[in-house]
Length: 200
Length: 92
Ligand SMILES: [Zn+2]
Image (tube, rainbow over all chains, first blue to last red; front, top):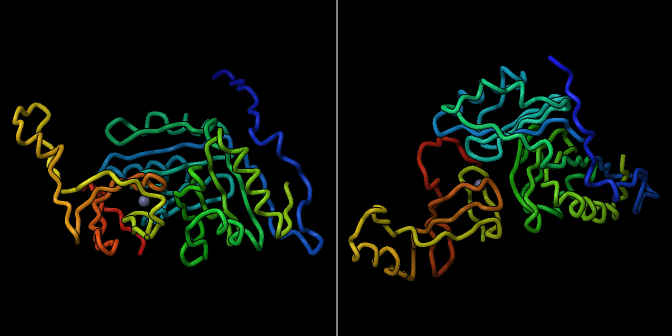
């Protein structure tokens, strides 16, 4: 197969992306913000009754086994998957081309695949005050027992729809619409000023 | 006011969109029964008390829900997926 030459993706955050320490960081940086820039962000949906088959396909293609229950998920570093709605899952890969890897396996009888790689921006917030800053944005419970490792949540911040996955005890990956990403990023930076933040 | 989405768990009402009275019965699209259409469009029980309603978790999982709400106290008595088939267990 001929090598694919894809255009280099430009970050919507670029004009407002300033690596370094900011805000009230004299006593240390309590939050680290970054853009993870995954190559693939997919939305998979199963028709009613086909969820188990879709979950099995996700396991075969990505090697990730979805735990039972609403909003369950798992991340392995390079790849991540989580439920965000009944029968619907977000699947993320550092590498491009994950949609092609699924091609053919999700038949029209099972469900659908939508490639959102260019439509979403992935922002990571990590550090001891990550829960604190997130709680200022979203009216959901971010404590570990209520929001376990790997789990996903669908919610929004002032009409900016967000999918959030917990990828560490004090780390969250936030997926927002690309068109809202810069505005959301600026708000997140402002909200992180009080605890001291570093952009990586 | 909190509404407990069967998928997402308890969420602020701001994440939901009211989709109307859940007692209405929509006639078949080809129906020419004018009384049935009139009832569907205009007739409302408008109770002071428990009321069947359709809501959408538009700012979350986007599922459509059957909600029983008390119109006097705003207490949410029950929530369920409007469509059957999905047996996903919600968070408490
Ligand atoms: Zn929901």
